Length: 138
Image (cartoon, rainbow, N blue to C red; front, side, top):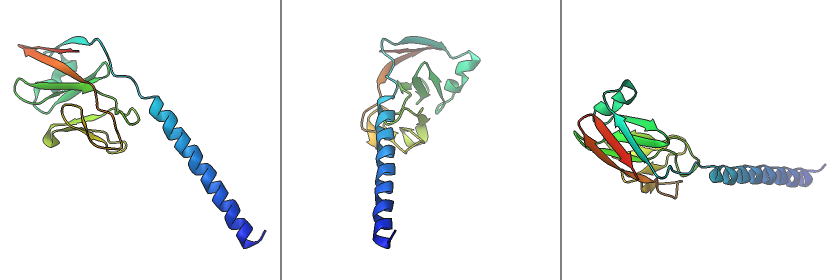
């Protein structure tokens, strides 16, 4: 095999490997969990499973929804799966955002994409807070 044949063969191999990787990415994009619908959850913040929500900046994931405490009596709730490849996102109150540590996508507190590669917004849910009860609903 001469040098030219070697380089052509090497280039074809790289192209096939790259195509296989891209096809895999597209398939993963179709596997993103759908956002929960018809949501109506009430959390008791006195329960230990919800204790992170007793502090401003705290968050939990519950049934595919990430809930974060943004103030003394205010909360935000959005679907927890990044719309790029489904990784569970993180609540970062100090940066006023949700963040996907897999590929760096960021979302505003209302779920809109502020930095890709994600292109679709997260689903936002309503919240009401009274005493120790936090209701999250569609």
